[in-house]
Every structure is written in C-alpha cells, then in structure tokens.
Image 1 (cartoon, rainbow, N blue to C red):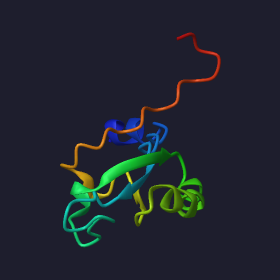
Image 2 (image 1 turned 180 degrees about the vertical axis):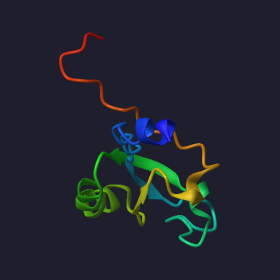
Image 3 (image 1 turned 180 degrees about the horizontal axis):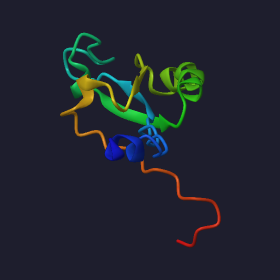
Length: 98
C-alpha cells in the first residue's frame, strides 16, 4: 500500500520529443520525380521542424524548390523505424552553455 501511494505522488513523465520531417521519394532513372509508391522508409529527408504546423506550412515551397512530391511525417511514425533518418536533437535549455 505504501508503494502505491508513493508512486502516485510522482509527477507525470515528459512526453517524448516529436519532430516533423519533410520527406520526398528519391528520384531515379524510372521515376525522375520520385516514386510516391515507394516505402516511406526509403524516402529522403529534406527538412525537419518542431511542429506539424511548421512542417505543413513549408510543403508548397519545398515541393516547388525540389520539383518532387513532399509530405510531413512524425519522427515516431513506425514506417520510419529503419529509414536511417537522423532524429532531430532536443533543444538545449535556454541559457545553458555549449
């Protein structure tokens, strides 16, 4: 009983840090604008953002710049598990020295 009440006083854990990636299918000889049907784990990371809104706001400009389809995906999307996409580092606390 004591253990239950002691653990009940702990603050909730911080939610995991989720980044949002702008990904695009990689172009090749058969699909110069990328194959949108290719597995997401093979897509190329173009950019990363801390919020879904920022990611989605960038899509039109990014697609225009690279002339390929682009989409936003959360860093915790299971389709990215073995993609090799490098997670965005968590921001350092304000005022901390490098």
